[in-house]
Length: 186
Image 1 (cartoon, one colour):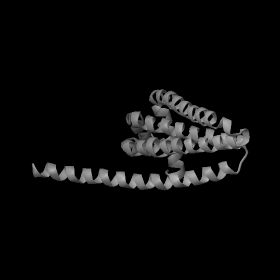
Image 2 (cartoon, rainbow, N blue to C red):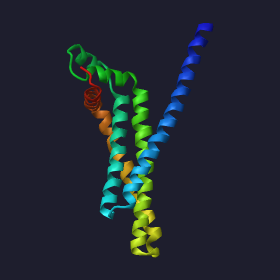
Image 3 (cartoon, helix red, strand yellow):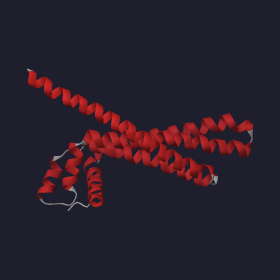
């Protein structure tokens, strides 16, 4: 009995430590993305601001797809590829074996930060439209822009989730090869 209790405590401590680390990392990344996006959005033409907003939404959707694919992927095909020394297969195995961490980073850190920052970017665009069109336009612009952002984000993620479930092997293989290339794996 005592050995079971000893095994549970380090796991709980490890989970709490991970939660603290990811909270701090998220805070730092959110500050960076917010500062960069607000700097660009305040001093650019409306069309460029809309492009930056679309880019933020797209990044959030893509990382949501990656996170779901990692959580849904099966390790067996990558074990077979690794036995044949296929480039990136070992990295895919590591990613799948640490799916909770990778999925958390992709879905919750990057995906959620992009969602929050895209809302702030939408507010900046609405403010720009209000200043251009006059104060009678303010409530309508804010409501329409925030609703469009929400609709595109949720719709894109809904489409992406089904894609990630169907194509998890291909998505994880692409991510694994990309990470292996960046990390300099052999």
